[in-house]
Image 1 (cartoon, one colour):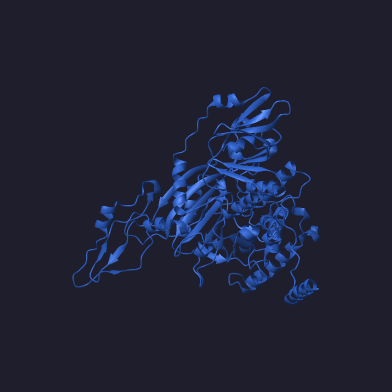
Image 2: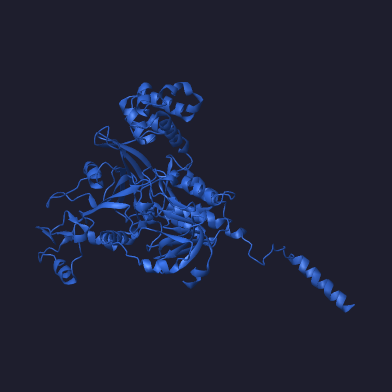
Length: 582
């Protein structure tokens, strides 16, 4: 790593989430030298995707996390006169209240013609840290079924066991963040503009659903859906179509909503004489806003949803195959193509600040190397409290489930579904659920990967466990019908999206990026990335298109002239022979 000592960097990026990865790619694309550092051994930070086994390792790391003690003597020996030090946090505290439960059985049940025998007692509910695979001798002993000499055992339909999940763990790609991509959103537009979209594949969202009175229903959001809906009366269909048509160009009719600009969107919906049924559809499943959202913001959200319909399918959303963690990696790849350098398991201990200009001039890494840079981009979780003006955060409650059935079984079991669960109380948040099938390359065949997200009012388990119990059968008593939920993880994630540069007391060339927010799309992260980029390079274009490989001309290569045709080369050779004979 000695070459790092002599490299003068334009931008040093620490902790590569989506925002930081986009900034790094944009800077590298326009010729800036970029070094991307992360203390972890994987890309994307809190935007990462894990295999099942990788997620279990991540859980263990979370439980065992300890603060890394840095030696200040190392810093001081590298600090010159006229320089000061800003230390960074060595512990990521953005994840909290992590709880994991396993409902999958630890062994199969075999059936004989005369009697039923259990190979081992099922483990109905157990903390993951306490679950371990049986030893080889015990496994061999337990795997010998009791059978009648006359009647060999017949294996019935197998429930997926915990051992099966671990064995097939590489088939899972489990996101820490649950988001979808609006087909006309900022992220999709950037992927197309920059040509980064060629690094990934995408799948349409097949179903948009809602849960009302304990029943999962299809949400009518397009003209065809509205008229085909069996949940709506004829009068409701006409009312909904009229309202959605108005929302498409509501700016042209300010007289319709100007008296409600400072009032909640829900009141405007009531004023439009929409039924309670339609109000729930629009508020929670189309606009996807809260009870407190103002009218104009609700109308814009509804309009955005409607304008995204039909671009790539019958719903407004796309999902990247292999999980959302692919998107930061795509931008990391673009950065690397244009010369960006990536170092995992490598972190920054502190920033070196020039006292005269009050700007960062270098960083000191965990190996005691001083690396010069002009700008430093970092994720919020690395900033210590003493460098903050505000420490007020929102929290996101998350649950990740592995199930063996879909929340809405249909003719095709290979559909991605978005389900909105309206709040049971007006003060409670709505819960958003994304159910992924095996064709999304995020789970093994025969299972579904379910993500639940909402704004926190308590711990993630307190917020989301009731929803899990409402939508799925969760068995906690031995002998009951097997649980539909095989494995579940609850955790809270810090949402710092409301913070801005004024929230930190840092040098002007330190750019702090917030982590994932609680919204369904990624517009907040992309807009922040573009803002930071223009602050660093105000005269450069943000993420110009990368050339196609076949269009690249390497140094020393010029455009090749067309070679002579067959007839031309024969004539030329004949002419040369004649001239030689003469």
